[in-house]
Image (cartoon, rainbow, N blue to C red; front, side, top):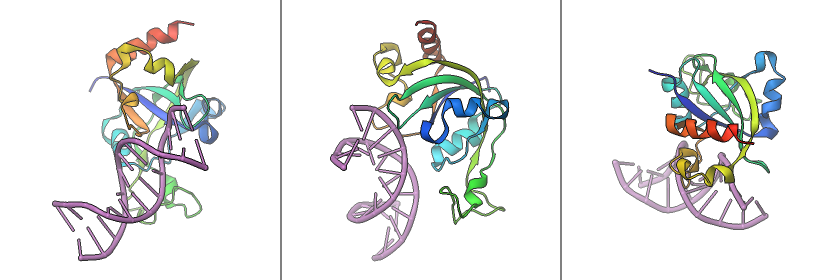
Amino acid sequence: MPQQIWLMKSEPNEVSIDDVLAMPNQTVAWTGVRNYQARNFMMREMKLNDIVLFYHSSCPQPGIVGLAKVVSAAYPDETQFDPTSKYFDIKATAEKPRWFHVDVQITQKTRWIGLNELRNEPLLSGMRLLAKGNRLSITPVSVDEWRVIKHLLNKS
DNA sequence: GCCAACGTTGGC
DNA sequence: GCCAACGTTGGC
């Protein structure tokens, strides 16, 4: 499968792009996903070196704040086994883990492209992120949408 | 804090 | 398998 592009949401009060930049290798284990569709994207469709748009959600300035890439295959999310974690899942076992995730490495902090700016771009009207009622924390981005976003990034 | 929209759970 | 009730997401 050719390289794909993804948009991944993170809440900056949990893990901001600056938090990730401060981590070893600027890499974060994308734990805590508890939605099957988002999990399945990571388990079944993500490939090494896929491009990731790093998005801040549930915050005063929601939007794209950086670029990243997928740097691991999917593996079991340790937080599902930890009773003290808010992501603990009592139905998950080491033999049959429920939740998997990849590791993501920041490649570039970019300017902020706010939700409004994305919405105001007609060429992005089909973006899954912008679909009415979308709540998925991981959404695919088409090659055409990626091209438009790269263009936006090159503007001031 | 509100609330629309969606996903999950569990009784039947 | 249906679907009501409940929980979560996330922008505003």
